[in-house]
Image 1 (cartoon, rainbow, N blue to C red):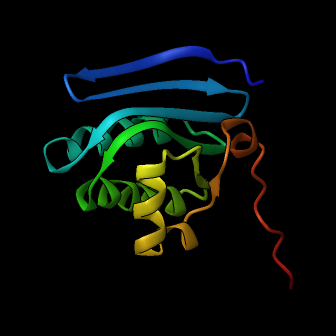
Image 2 (image 1 turned 135 degrees about the vertical axis):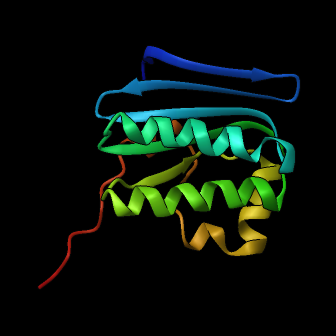
Length: 131
């Protein structure tokens, strides 16, 4: 089991909680609650702050996500572009059944690596590039 360290940042509203921590070389943002239009910006901001920590990997843990709308998905994809521009892999960990369903329906699970557990996600390795 992964041990969390350095709880650096917590954002809490009635319908969403974001906790950011470091696990080895990875920064983990754990999302709990509803991701929708009204909190898309705080999600983007928290993930952008996580990227500012210059991690080797950004993992978004989603096991406690109770609602994921297209606005919430847009926040994840916006941060993915930022992460790609910094050569930081962004992966999703343990999405709840609700989140997993939207990821599958939209094809986002084909664009973002999705792992069944946080332990597996933080061990993500980029495919080697062949020349």
